[in-house]
Image: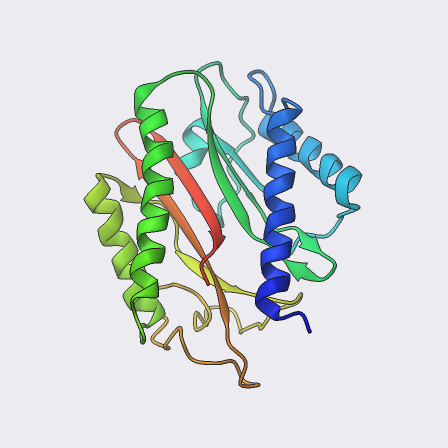
Length: 224
């Protein structure tokens, strides 16, 4: 019998493939707007997997918009020759959720390339630390992520640093109830099972920002 984790890993593998095809087909190019890139990605996902449902809004952020948190709806920017951008997509594959985010750099700006490398390295560092724990609240993990950002020399750009994931729709809480998020107001143990006694599975998302250079980066995938 296929486990929840195996289904989530399978969904994430398909999301990774989608991101690879986005690159292979050269969809990310200067002169294209964030909105148009978003549409192109939607059309590609439908072509490849017949996906037309996402469990959260599709995020394409470039330039100064990479500083903005998820809940914002900033103005539509045009990708520049020497730009940085990130994608945050939540496609649903046969009722199983994926949540995947990556940063891209157009050009050879050293600070942007370093941010891209740093945020991926920090993600794996945060995962390794998490796996050493046996009890950890969402608030404690969020604080760890903030300290990790500072260690790498960045600020933190998101309200969250992760969340639950599962079969669509996964567990829901009332607005402003952050018990299923990596958030400063979540004082629940992330290792506790759900209401049915099943293991919970988490996404880790990291959003570093360099306020001085007005750039940000994002990296997101399965934590557990």
